[in-house]
Length: 346
Image (tube, rainbow, N blue to C red; front, side, top):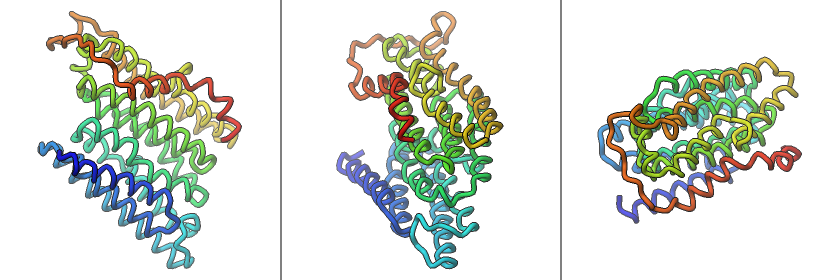
């Protein structure tokens, strides 16, 4: 892709996200979301492969529907209350339509069907943008309207997302699809605590972004898109594969690593809100995710020949690990000791 074109699209992504985050009026928020959607489409379809074109088409149709629903919900609210302010969303029907629209934007169950397909058809770096940067504007809108949303609907969606994200990721062989289902599962954790403690949702999103960025950049540097190539990537960059294993276990939420922090705080918050059954269910459902993270970690580091595959082994490269991957990986595995500093502010 032409560097100037790429610069325009990335600038538009930043502009769209900034407009949504800083807006106070529903129309400006909607405009920011539209700029974002239009900026990411060329990045999805830049390879001109039929699957990439299909992914871009699916993405466009889903996001256009979600934007129309968002506009409809804000107009209904304005019709009943006379308010266009984002924080003044008080009409119950509007809140329900808004929840559906933002769930569709994010890929929460039951509006999740588009996300694995779109991620599978996109390049790894665009996949990273779709999993992280493109989710920030809808999550910001959820954060701003958190007090008006229906907790029962969000809890139901969250538990279904954690369940389906775990179940459907079990049988996958494509790494991008596994990461898409992982994203759906993590969105469930963010949605369940949104009404009770929106700051905790944002913390979970930031840490998820950190860990996912480390994984996508590692996969991109070893050029890995399926489990069979992941099995042979350890010969190419052994240190990177070892750190990939730790980052995957962190994303699964295992205790000494960063990923345990948001899960721990969310379960604590749900228990405070007397939602122990929901906390128990979502904690048990995270075991499904743990299974496929362990599978990825096993393929990345523990599988040795002759038990792996018939693929050609890759040459060991002495190319240094990019500093961005090094920093992200360290942060993805070592932030748990900061939890006493974070807990009082949330």
